[in-house]
Image 1 (cartoon, each protein chain N blue to C red):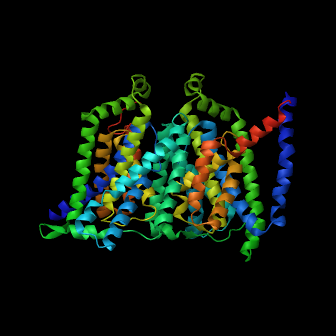
Image 2: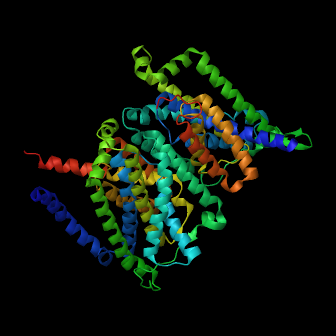
Image 3: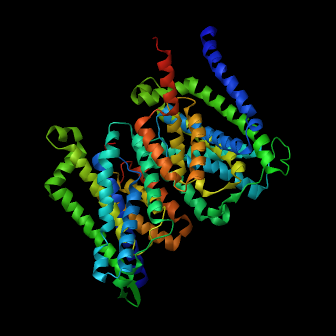
Length: 326
Length: 294
């Protein structure tokens, strides 16, 4: 039994180790600009990994993941403002708790539906949070948002050089959390639970017939997905330095969907690739023209028309083509 | 009493515009089973085109009657955009999963939003001249803008027209048949492609009309489409996706709740609307008037 398990593991290690070393070297090789952009990409990567547990593995398209991401970010902001906390570990724990509670409540309502109604319902509920953040400005700072100072990592003072902190120590912190999240998600989707989700995605009736409790499984997937997004929101908050309602509004959910499709949601690492690629794309598009939405919108339409399986789908196709016996 | 009447009129005003937007969205979903995320942007196109046309004409010193005649320009423009979009961008997606339809319309939304920015710039555009020209009427001791009454009339009239069109004409029969069973309609000789393009164009025309009649009262601004879309979602979710009666009832509910919200509970006014939508979905998944088929 051990031998067939080891081979895929070796295969994964064969590309994971060089990639990991490259990621470790990043802050020393490239400047802070690229390090920070990559960090945004990794942070979004966590959120999109979570999102894809629903879309890619359970077959549910959420158009409201901004709610859990934003909940994570605002959880950090509130902990700073009202409890005067500064420890990143507490921030992460707090945002996991808050996003779990919100996704349990929202998920309880949403998982009764599938397809388009699921999408609309997640969207409508996420807008509840947005409108609250927008209207209760004396609590949330309204559109100005709430400032988030540099946090303490593992009980260590961040120091005064913010750029140095973000580009080195915080980068490694984010990288560590990211790797941990990716491993956890990998284990989840390859566990019996993950297989059950895929069975639900492929054939609901059959899955129910073999004894899978569909609604409960969907709810668990929904909550895991929300917690990943919340965790990403918490990591994002100190990086951005400001929590604003922009991360709660539904168009940000659209960007999360965009990232998943760009990378390819049929593939485990597609969402990560998509998140990093999207972050670079958006950063350059925003720097290049004020009409970046036009550019990204066109990319999205062309992508959906010509490359529906995303970047990783394309890569898989090319690899399969190269391997084909001549 | 008088105070209440003005609130009722404001609610009706808001409901009229909402009905035009949400009715179009619902019509398109009912016939084509496609949820158009760019629908709000077509409403914005209507607003921008009308504001621009009236603004340009007024600056050129056109007579007042011409300004009123230019009002529907936005509706025509939105319909033209819709007629161009359906066969080119949407048609390849009918046989593919919904996530792709949502994504392509989301991409479209981004494109249209920026095109408006590109053409008309970042500043709000207004057609306030028409609003002033319409004058005001006396309600008790207060004065109420006559233009708002005209908007309410347009809303009611278009609801009636649409109803007559769909339930009393031959085209309406074909449209309903296609909506109920596209394959059967196609087998019986209905040109489904043509019905789709017509339905989509009518839906966009309504959204554009909504934008066109709203713009004398308030300015056309960037982002108005995104905001309108979410409210239109609330309306169709309450009323039932794909049902025109539902869009009508939903628009009235949202209009009145919003007006009451602005007066009584301004902080949670939007949250209450979204929560109503969520509760309706829980209690009656297909909406108040939906056909519970899906």
